[in-house]
Image: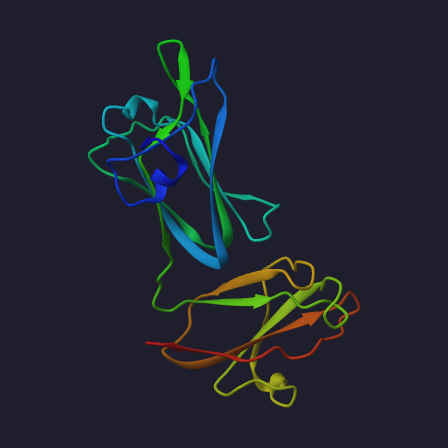
Length: 219
């Protein structure tokens, strides 16, 4: 009864998630879904005591913001699990709404399984970085898809009037259709109070409305 999906995220290494026995090698998935984009930079996995040989040696961790397009974050081959300690895998801070762990089954006797005692994810906590989350604007008001986003930073709330004087950059982020949740990790920020806003740019370079200013304090 303890070998259920919820056991992988119950903070109890004495319980575990196990797949049904399979007749051959293949792939199993664990998916973790978040209510809003979260900047993740570390994944920790723990094998089950007595079942470490069924922890996958080969697996890929992928992330997505839109629930459809997944990008690889970590690729592991030949991992040897130690149930006495969690194995940590770090990567660049990546805003995601979902993580997917694609694991190759291990075998015992003539059956194949994946058994994982615990999955933990950690939000990036760089002192000079913030995660700006927002709802994707369209390229025509609140419809369509922007060609790109521009992000501005200033010492005061941003408006059309002070936009040109702000620190403005093109965001390294592919726009999603209007209404989708998105997030940008902004790094290298100096200590102090900052206001950020996002504007959509359409295919001919026209700027959309200035989004609501978001205030962050970097200490």
